[in-house]
Length: 489
Ligand code: ATP
Ligand code: MG
Image (tube, rainbow, N blue to C red):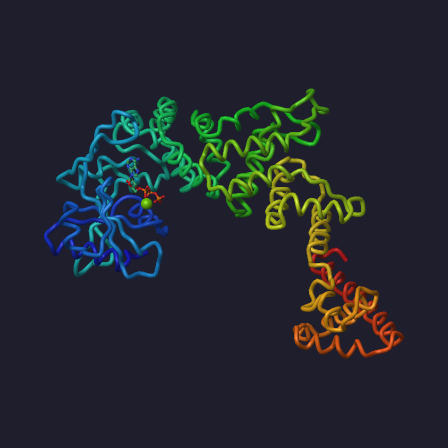
């Protein structure tokens, strides 16, 4: 791993102008772990006006006192680099926004205001011999914690979380994404300060939550949130499933089942919508449960669950299209399918209800649900067959609608009124374009209509019958190909 030339060039320019400048924060952490950083941040002794003078092509965010510099890089992660002046820990009287941002004189002060030891490391470029590896400035022993794979607050953990409660979520997110554990005192301080999360804006909580759900260890992350007492400020509805036993089809309680489904979805690297649907698909079960033990029922849980999911996602202010998709996945996750038992019309209805664009994800949710139940029923063949049937019903029916001329055109060209002849001519034209789609051009077809119009009734009849046969053959051929593709022959 190397520090990109765009970052080096920015640091060099700042240094040349007489300021200190370092790579700092998450990117220094990732660099030391040989991971590719999400973004590159630079901290400097120069104040914003001085930075702006050195980089005329900048964007200044007044509120955060951060200068963003545009580079020529094509890499989206390097297009813009944020430069922040050294600052010190500000006073947070509302636990979420610093009352004011105070510039600091030294790098050490700046590192001390950062949240975790592994995030409080700076890299200084070296010149000449050894220029390849930077000098590491690590006053909180972040490197040792990186080795031990622990997230530890920089400084007094209790103070750090009570200063800024977003750090509660950041701790869990970092531990989950990096596959680290929480250092003991840090963990205890999170539990103690958990209620402060109430003060944090839902968007900032959501951003951390989404990063947890998108990570490989998503399910562990959710469970960690719960154990630390944070989940009730994020998605309290999930906790209703804890200890809510299911029936003979399941070995886990509702909460565990949701979690295992998410775990499977993450293992398979399914997208965010599928992961959220896997996590929420049975969220309403505790609310509709009737009876206890092996015969308990949960009628309507998918309907109540879809409504509940909509409410949760709205509360988390997730993008509308994502939330619409997740709600549909939850609503239809229970679809019933059995080869030979469920007909094309039901499959068509499922496609319409769930939305054709959501079907692949719906099947993924179903797989996650199955595996997450702990007692997976044999279903792959069934689902494969369903896929085949869906592909069959969703291809356009071969019909005269595909033609570039219609019945009106035929009547107008031949100056005839509605009659079976019109249908016959369309059938014949359709037969021709099924054989050779290139013939489906308005002008050519109009000429062909004129030619067919001159034929006798008998000749026309014969041609129409032949066309009908050809159409059947083509449909059959296509069905065979679809079957093969879905492996259900
Ligand atoms: P990511 O890999 O997602 O970018 P990150 O640790 O870089 O993770 P950023 O939000 O990019 O997270 O923040 C950059 C750095 O700023 C952090 O590494 C940390 O040093 C500091 N930081 C961010 N948020 C806080 C906070 N709430 N309290 C203290 N320091 C913070
Ligand atoms: Mg970052």
